[in-house]
Amino acid sequence: NEIRIFSPATVANVSCGFDVMGFCLDSVGDEMVIRKVERKGIHITRIEGFDLPYEAEKNVSGVSALAMYDAIDVDFGFEIEIYKKIKPGSGIGSSAASAVGSVFGMNELLGRPFNKTQLTEFAIKGEALASKCEHADNLAPAMFGGFALVKSVSPLVILEIPSPEDLYATIIHPQIEIKTAESRALLPKEVALQDATTQWANFGSLIHGLHTGDFEVIKNALHDVIVEPHRSKLIPYFNEVTKAAINAGALGSGISGSGPSIFSLSKGIENAINVKDAIEKVYAKTGIDFDIHVSKINSKGIKII
Ligand code: HSE
Image (cartoon, rainbow, N blue to C red):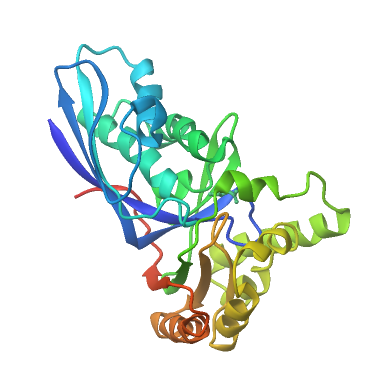
């Protein structure tokens, strides 16, 4: 009647895949307990880690849980406990982890009536509460693991993209908060055809490189000419970090989701650690607090623990 889950952090956009691509991390994630109870409805009974609303309608986990609860006909309810480890506004899918956690857990307790795509559809409602827009590029990798491509939101179509075994991410999180909604408001409504051409050439190459495990192709694909020029201004020392990462051997670096976190991808854990050391050196001089870690790509996604 009760289940404990690990709901992972994720990196959205992956440079050239704004709003359609993301990957899943295995070193950071929230824990949640979902419990079947007699009292009907959705009840958030405990939140630890960060100050978030207990009212289900105002809480990302609660909103996705309510979307699923409305779609089922049961004479019992669910309690949700949230042990939040991913800082809201850090750019590694904090709201997505909350949004998928409740529906994944409820589905398990119900005997899995819904598939992962259907669960992600409920979770989109929760994610929209946080970012004021229905996007699934953090939800899909959190739910499916690995790299996930959101082919379309309506109808929701998610493609699981394979990736080479020895691909690692280094994530630095400067301790400033950037709200996704605000960071989206900065973006232009129209883009130049030349930029669009560059972007889809890069994105197609990224997909090809991930499929074939060709690190050279992945490296040449990790560029963003559309979103990063606008958003990087919000992130202190962004250019210095990406330069240091490349010099230390990273395949590429970019803004994680809507920032302020910055991700780098590397071949092998040793490179990823060198990249971490190099970025740490840059940031240590800035006086801005940060945390930084290396993570393997999490191929499983959300799971019962
Ligand atoms: N694709 C979204 C954005 C991810 O960049 O706004 C935010 O979590």
